[in-house]
Picture 1 (tube, helix red, strand yellow):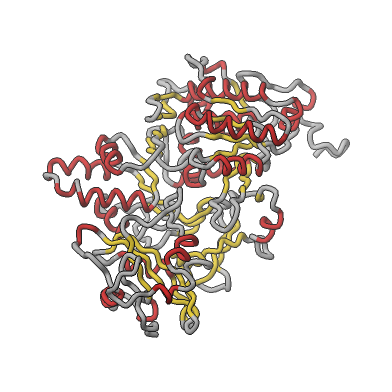
Picture 2 (cartoon, helix red, strand yellow):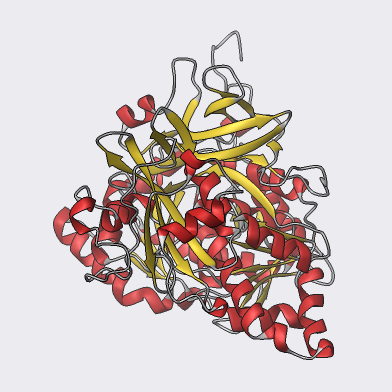
Length: 582
């Protein structure tokens, strides 16, 4: 502070010199400073390998294309918008692209402009994309070449509604044929970009209403990236295989910014998941990191058991070696069920798949630490450094309450929701229930979905799912609460059966008998449905309990219950007519 003038900037040299801007000047920020240094290395390191576009790009070529797209974007904006950005007014620009090189260039181009980036899924409907654009008041859309028709359609409709043009710019059309020389790319000598301004908007899944836009501060981009890189010792020799959506927190916070910040190589393959392709890619090697969701690990386990396990030992060895060559396998967006986790631990010679607990609004706050062999089975690990976490009620079980430096700043245009999600002391109310044992945490589930109150007991749906999945004939399971007049709620299980076990049907009596030695009677399912194939899931691989619960177990469930052994349009006869044994 200048105590004579009262101005914070009066003593800063930038107040008295022309702005340091230009077509080859990147903003002054820790993130771009890192990328520029990587672009000066010899030999030039690869940044992106895009398997869909069949291209490999170095950090130097990446920054060259980032500047080209940034400069074109700047020319397409109004003078008022450019002035807002220069004054630090939060300004939002959309990126409509699947994971790959075009996505990477677009994300960095928006940040290089000084604006906030809003990644949007190419799997979204036109109406959903319009909602994202309007909710964040986007001033432009950058789109991948393959997504141009849909993006331009959205831009045209919004332009008509606003009576003002919404620029829609195709990313790939602006790529440069040759990179700039390293010394031609500089970092601005102006003041650092404000870390407290908006840098990124991630929309929530919208399972409890319209998706909310969580605004992440600009500092989150480099701070969270550094935290991940440090925690898992990511370096410039690492190669990440990225197959997850790039508009969710997992695909961005864990798997995108962190690996670029570390100078590593990201190998993208967007599109539908194919376990056969994945196993073949793993077998070829050259990868050190992979992050998936439980569905991916389940499908790869199933493919191995059905196909690869039958190979001759020498042929099977290459696949096993491919798995064991990874430094780290991550699982995000939900806990990895015990049988699946145990399978991968065995496949990796005792090294477990690392799990994390976090959310869009606050990143990862509980993690299994690298090389921590003492983490108990079923735990998601310890609190990450710098995070303040407590359980409601002050004991060893309760709702997880969070304060973290990487927390979101607000929900877009929803001050009420932003306020209501915090308690009186400023802790974020996660809605998730956990149990603490020493320094380790166990997630019991969502308070609204996974805690079942039956006959005076509080029961964790996730605990029951864990035990049901341990049965050899169960492929998948979802446990939910179903309202009951006498007991308050019943425990209901929706399951699919493994095809290689020869079990043609499953009755509630068989399931309960097999669970008898594994759990108390009051925890056992009293309602059961069996479905063929996989349970339906959302884009992040999570089973959509809020939707599937009422669908498979409606409020008038008693009217649908056939006598045990009879079929009436439901897949099997699965309901127990008896009340729970408490």
